[in-house]
Image (cartoon, rainbow, N blue to C red; front, side, top):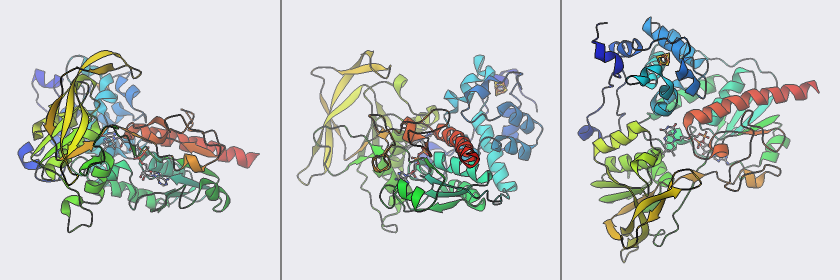
Length: 470
Ligand code: FAD
Ligand code: SF4
């Protein structure tokens, strides 16, 4: 394929819905590469002898090899290579922060723009989904049972790995739909839900049982899973769904939401279709989102699509400390989200009916680094001002819900609620119980949760085998 010398150092762009159109719908924003675009991008890869890109992948995808297959037009083979280590490639190709993981190590990135590894992964995965749907069948049972708590990326990955080894796996999920944050948090316009359910369907084909509407720790305890249901081991992948609040006056006003509640109402319960759907949500004319991570971007962009006229992201640090994926940040800017750096709310102000109407904010400056290593934001005296806000969404981070740990004797946690588990094996302080994903690390990424689920599955297999040999 002909290309100019300069093209070699620039990522092949991905076509997407224009910003002015997409703010009126929930359809996916980027369209994905065409075959020609995929080929142009794959051919930029140098097929390095020592591919540094691979060092950044938490699930060890053989990146160079799958790109080599793409270059040869062997798309199905490329997808098989990816799937040899990554069970959810169509999802990772869309939501992984590649710029901090594989792409950061890409040698091409030293001279120009790194290879668009995520976009190529998405191409191969989508192609395979359409052209070569897996004929995964239930492997023969090895007679041992494993329970998984939570159907997010950690739990689903552990379930898939164990099912492939012949374990009888049952996943218990608190919500009425499996998928975790992939279903209730990340919006449709970033990650189509049909795609998530298709991946989950493959697990079911392999014999994994998924029981929804079961809160382990309330519906039944971990001890009951061992004693009454006869599981040999348990993996806890219950995520970090407990929202953090700011603790300032006015936080209990109507119209102040945690991002989790807000996104769950809109994504999972389709509140934007109320009254055709049962769950309402009130989106004001002006929306303020507090925080600047992926969750904040999702809440802001969802608000624009749900009728808000103006959406403001308010963050006490600066753009440099923001944790959102670069692509989501750029999309948010294009869609008209307004950013207020070094700004912090100190009070939410309401009307006589108890609805939030505005917030009092203070300007900040950056001081010495705090415990997180980032510069500590310090309020500037006398800098208070008021900002309109008919809806406020708090996207300040989350921590693990204590419902499993508090009902399971011997399962130790950190002071902030995370389950204490070995980094390599996921083994917890209680024999037979393993854990991984956000419930161990606190809010992190999809691929890290998957990596933890995979490692724990291997450790569970080893644990059960060792018990059999005893
Ligand atoms: P979760 O996905 O939280 O799944 C845990 C599951 O366990 C949930 O379904 C929950 O209902 C269930 N559960 C909890 N308690 C119980 C119980 N007692 N009994 C039964 N079930 C239970 N990461 C990225 O890599 N890229 C992104 O672009 C990105 N965007 C994000 C956007 C938002 C809005 C949010 C909130 C997070 C985002 N993340 C992103 C982070 C990523 O989604 C998480 O790190 C990942 O989903 C963690 O996976 P997990 O399996 O550990 O937990
Ligand atoms: Fe290709 Fe970059 Fe990986 Fe080298 S480091 S194999 S150029 S993707």
